[in-house]
Amino acid sequence: NRCKICGRPHAYLRKYGVCRICFRELAYKGEIPGVKKASW
Image (cartoon, rainbow, N blue to C red; front, side, top):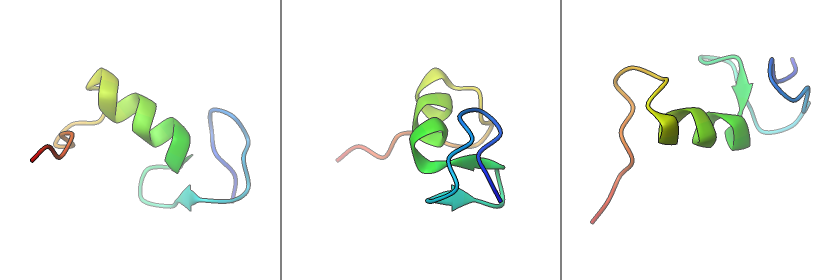
């Protein structure tokens, strides 16, 4: 399994199809519904 965006084979999130780095970018842009930045 590889990230759909950057092709990274490690730190891949199967549920979203992207690696954690791209996931973070997408979540930050608000492109993943239901995912909010945790802030405390």
